[in-house]
Amino acid sequence: MSELVELTSDERSTLEKLESRQRQVRRGAVLQRENEPCGEMFILRKGLMMSYVLLDDGSRQILRFLFPGDMLGMSSAIYREAPETLAALSDCTVAPFDRTALAGIMTAHPRLSAMIMVHAQIERVALTDRLAALGRTSAKARVAALLLELRNRLRVSDKSIANVFALGLTQEEVGDATGLTAVHVNRMLRQLEEDGLIAREAGKVTLVDERALARAANYVNRYEGLDLSWLPAA
Amino acid sequence: MSELVELTSDERSTLEKLESRQRQVRRGAVLQRENEPCGEMFILRKGLMMSYVLLDDGSRQILRFLFPGDMLGMSSAIYREAPETLAALSDCTVAPFDRTALAGIMTAHPRLSAMIMVHAQIERVALTDRLAALGRTSAKARVAALLLELRNRLRVSDKSIANVFALGLTQEEVGDATGLTAVHVNRMLRQLEEDGLIAREAGKVTLVDERALARAANYVNRYEGLDLSWLPAA
DNA sequence: CGATTCTTTGATGGGCTTCAAAACGTGTGG
DNA sequence: CCACACGTTTTGAAGCCCATCAAAGAATCG
View 1 (cartoon, rainbow over the protein chains, first blue to last red):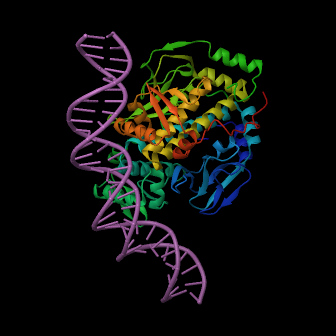
View 2 (view 1 turned 180 degrees about the horizontal axis):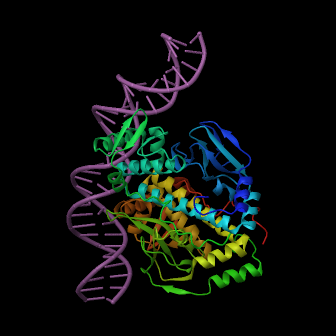
View 3 (view 1 turned 45 degrees about the vertical axis):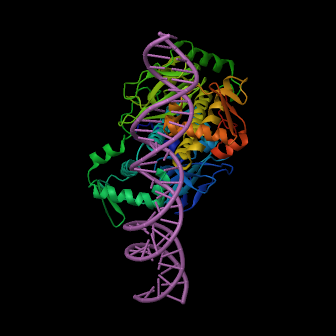
């Protein structure tokens, strides 16, 4: 959040207190299961997680990948039962907090609440991008968009990442995120490679022609182009 | 918002002031255009609107239908340029307000801000439902889900609506919302009719077997099952 | 009442799925 | 450290769902 605006020391200590408790989560572990009573919310400190839903034919739709700094389970906060499952894709560290803490922040820190809202809106717009991708773009474009999004999000917490990065996902998972089968994801990756847009080696992906990739994917980085000048005073 | 909790007179007057200015919008008119600098936000008072994006092959993805009581353009508030277009599907009345007013509410009315956040989260979950529908369900299921959602949302502001309602959308629009072609939407409506799930007459749709329709559509009403006990005090 | 938009139906084709199986990694226990 | 089991990646073949193209009715509007 400190990347959006300069925080006051008061705000900073409030957030530090919010994140004071920490919990380790193993790869594959589930933090919250769909349709079960929802307990806490979390801030992801380290690692990669995802949220997904299971349809009753057994298929899975990955709704979102979660990166360090993201808030998890905010939507669950307002429902009696969780609308989505939260699971760890790598070993993770999370900081749990409860609804009371959220209510406390909203009462005492208007600017922090506004920034939480800003985060929620960024996430919402990213969701609409994916909605448009699933509804109206080709398999190749969806896979390309996922690669770009993943690289950009990973780079936020690891500045060393440039055009090469570890995918960290199976092709099955890429398929569940893009609405495709693992088989077809494989073919699309192959095509992107043949087209000279990406390269692959030992589980690492290289974005060879990022410009062309973004064009093919209709991709917009939603963490740019913000206007936060209107935020309430600290 | 008064349907979520009992508002205090202070909160009520704040919201009334927010909605004091009113503007008429003709059917087909555009309130906000994608990629243009965003001005105001709005509360929809009357009528039916939609938000959509255009992809560069000219295809359209309708992101959301907007009903009385909904806030429009909240996502635009945080960007310099609007990420989506807002257009009226029927003659509408909207109440415009600016970012300053939003910041003012967040400072002076913690509970109202929390309720705005609740609204945003409901909308987010509804979006993820549609994401899962586009990614993992059949054309028939998507059309069925749209019919159920539309009926339920319309009923909120018009209690007289039961199982019969005016669609208010062209099949082209249904297609742009569900990621299908108008031609295929037509076939799916026909199939739903042949299956005895719906009936159609003079532009009106009847949900004949709502239970079966919800099952076919994997549909969950996200305006139910809320837990708002944690909201900050008024 | 003419014009335009919307709905409906048919025929054809393609993108993606499904099914199947081999090659490749990767972690685990002996 | 090897052997085995299991998950993942890769490739092929066949088929289906939905798109595309086309055109005729129906409805709506000026």
